[in-house]
Image 1 (cartoon, helix red, strand yellow):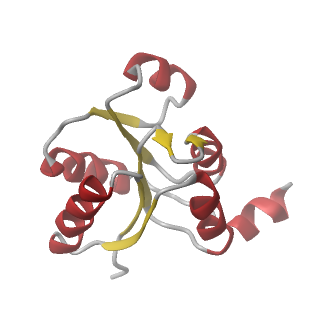
Image 2 (tube, helix red, strand yellow):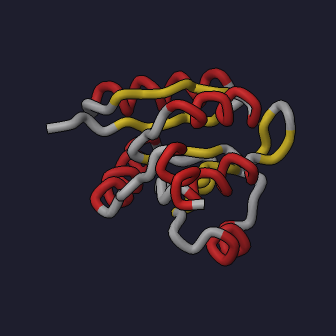
Length: 131
């Protein structure tokens, strides 16, 4: 059985480390945490996580370019933010989930488990080949 992997995109170090520990203790492989769009985008060029957790506001802007890549590649994700409107995010990214900060890491883990059950991610090479 392939282990599940989660990309963490979060610029608040204590939140990121808490999430990382929670996911690793639950048996997930963790990519990141990455604090920027640039770092996350570089990772996604060569890697395909099972799903992702995205803070909206990062050190180099809002996370939407990363969310667009994840959506294009059918990689499910959870927005984890205290500064975003969950309804607007759900309209723009219908397949995503939203957890308002602060929330317990266990709640995010539950959302990831639900998302990973329906995950069918495509690699960046798959997307380029179909374009």
